[in-house]
Image (cartoon, rainbow, N blue to C red; front, side, top):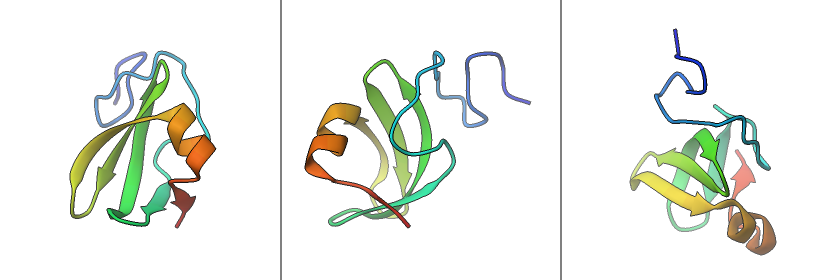
Length: 70
């Protein structure tokens, strides 16, 4: 069971939310398929199949449409 304020993957979420639900599958045009692990402040953490963990700016992801639900 995850500790308060943390997702099951151990990423702090601080009650933050973003454009994609935590644990949803997303796709990036260059990095491929990934899993949204959580949000912290204005950042989101995604585990990509090939590129591993990436910390992304929620603002940039939203403004540039970098991720889509897979």
